[in-house]
View 1 (cartoon, rainbow, N blue to C red):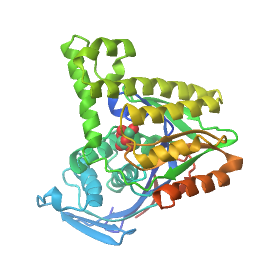
View 2 (cartoon, protein in one colour):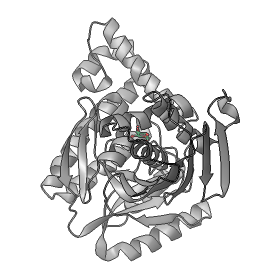
View 3 (cartoon, rainbow, N blue to C red):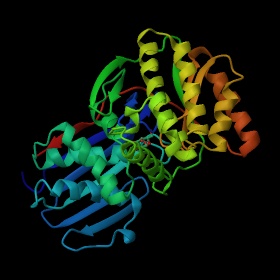
View 4 (cartoon, rainbow, N blue to C red):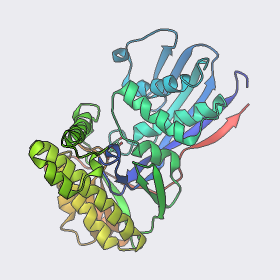
Length: 376
Ligand code: GLA
């Protein structure tokens, strides 16, 4: 391949029907890719330079791979790319630099995994450009490690999994312990998914996400001391949790309760979807929200308002916050024939309280990451 060879890659964002904060606890999730994502056009520059243009915000950043630049001086968006590049350089130390333009259709901070879309798009693109032959599974972990090591978010694997493995028109019941998954056709009959953006931009990095993860790790440590041998909170059930209760703080007990019950809900939701029992799916989604709000404490006023507002609308079967929390979108199961009414009602009631109109998205369950074009 010469200097002129270029690759265009694309990786999508995701929704998650149910199963929040369970992935890093080796539990269950039910995500799917959406028709919004990040495209990267890249070519080798045969220098040790990472030159990246963020087309959407008209910014450029260049990083000299020979130097050790301090991470604090680097724009956040660039860290996702640098993180992937550094992880991939571990596979091939002589990786040349690249010139890259990227652009994304995913609203930032909406809980739709704009970050996994960036890291996965770059990872599959570099793999193709340099003919590295890295298998899908490893690319998924590379994208995750980029966030752990360069961005500082100890995220789970759900977003990268959904971005890389998803197929159109199906959600995936992923067991994050075994990393095996079962595709389930996404059929809601007369209902559909509508996302409502609270407009509050979540800051997972800003400690709260990592704090939740640490609390769950602490539960596992305490269990070990009590001779309850578990690898993750998901290995507990409500009985073993109660045996452990005297050793736990109130917060630890609440967080673990959420994880155990949420795993259960995911399994029930997968079965409900398979049996076309959308009413049951909706109930589980409402329950998930209550638990994320009360037990896991990752919701906020705007999200709670959006969820509560749907309870008066008999054409909405379920609503909950989605993703890491502290803002972002709610996921709603709405009757197709009342979609327009739903939009009007939610917009006007949200506007009355928060003086701003929420963005509302209709998303399609779509294919995972792919190379769009390649030229030599
Ligand atoms: C973020 C993380 C995921 C997952 C969710 C919460 O999206 O990136 O790994 O933990 O939050 O379910």
